[in-house]
Length: 281
Ligand code: IPD
Ligand code: CA
Ligand code: CA
Ligand code: CA
Image (tube, rainbow, N blue to C red):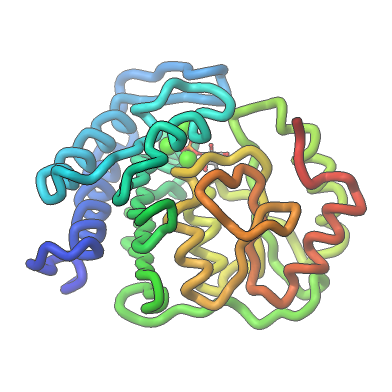
């Protein structure tokens, strides 16, 4: 576990240490959260553990880097386009930390052990550090721009499938239910074409799994910046491809995401496109 105890003040070391601390704390609270609040609907929940994790992360990061900016999910007014508006407010900041304090809150509430802490640092709008930590498996995925993606100190790479028919694909269903029809249309189009589909409930971990070659690809309609910023860098640094569903290269403002090992990307996108399942308005 030497990766957790790096003593230096490098961006990556702080991101790694902070994600590990928050993750361990969240795990210790599993099954004992006391407050459950609805954000926009019963599909969109928050607990005191989400808020506590965000406070812990914010404090640690701001102690090290008081001049950096911070964007965390629970610091933003709930609702559609939440991250787009919040990002606009940070348009002129050089260093922006983008944090999802628990990605997979629904799983956390139900005790389904698939949730993560996602911490990214963007420089002038581009992720340069990405950490996704899964405390249930003690798996910490870390990427640094230009330096590769790692799990437990070992370099990770995307999978080798070249055809959709050999692929294992992930997806998810966002809290913003206006995106649900197009999600379901996409699911109906993709499922018969692939080996199988998994929807495990943490977009950040799905992206980390694409980076680690455990999923061949992942798409989801209606995500926010904090769900993807760390995972996007992991996918890129592991040799994969990440765009929006229309094929535009990934940026922080992407909401409909398509990530893959690169080799199946066009076929994946074409299948969604033919079903008219690329996005919603
Ligand atoms: C959610 C998870 C889920 C995805 C939703 C996200 P949250 O994030 O990533 O897998 O399907 O779209 O909102 O609310 O648990 O942080
Ligand atoms: Ca949430
Ligand atoms: Ca999330
Ligand atoms: Ca969250």
